[in-house]
Image (cartoon, rainbow, N blue to C red; front, side):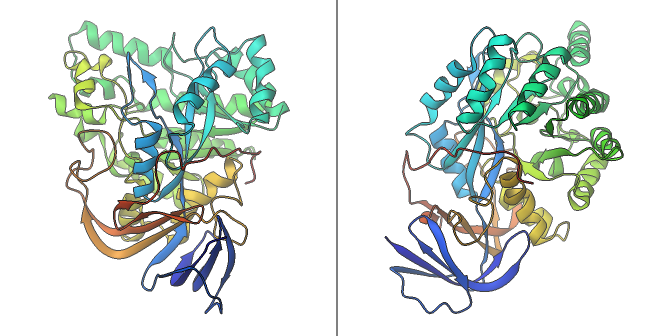
Length: 458
């Protein structure tokens, strides 16, 4: 069994911070301590580097069918790009087709990911057609290690389920110890506003934003929390963006309810001023849309208050030519934003380096909390004896610039073109093997492994 010793790094977890050595044997961590008296097959000197657990991005859409096309990153290109950004595990969304089974959907996604993923991965199951047959499949998915089930409160006629189906799904998922997540926006209201804007000839990307005002997210977030409280299920809101929605979560805490919250890196750093009257704004057409600066302040505060547990990406990239499907009508622009590669470096630079969050909070929201909420802890999400040796070495002072010309995502533009960051990921290990070093990929197609997940451990 090959061994690797990482010496003299500043090792930071959600509950510890110390300069020490890490001994890796095979795929797992064998020892942690100062000046470990061991010989290893390979030694990495991490002096001056910060070592954190491999990132977990629980919200990605790889090779996903949407609006007549597919997201442009495959499980191979997407997980490779994730590794370059310090994310060693992603959770992708399997989308059930209406009229079809969960098992059929899972087989389709397994066919895309098995043997192609470069980094580790798991799946959520998006339930778009909850019926008696689907209900019977919930326990089968849990047995497969898929313990989280997504619902859409928007995209009527394609992905959306109604409140009656939501109640039924929550009751069944609770019975089997799972978690229900929600895209919490009011689909009926959004569809009405889209139709009004189109009828008035208001067709630029700005009207994508104006069709999804804050109230559409706040109302749906409160309704989801209320239904979850009634059923008693573990509940998680994906890509929460705004003050009104987070206030609904605050309200839920007043009745001692726990609602997990994820925001995404773009909602912390970008705002709706990017939606102009030219087509450039299509780069940031995503759902929910970017919000206001006051919402950014709310989200940063929510992270430090513990109301926001996870920072993901909702990575769903489309080539510029794909975006141009909506050149004459904002409602035809494929919704999605590329970010899987830059989440951790952006959050380190804009969060840790600028004093908005602590290093330990950085570890919590990029890795540990997701591992606990989605049933992978302590195998993933921490640096401890017996854990997978998923490690990220960061040079905290190194400056670099984001550009589509240098990123590894399969998309021909960047939502952060020209951003100058402080803090660069230097080396990434996945299950004990150096996966990325100094910008070079060291593991190949198929190295990624499916991660079976258990119940919430938060």
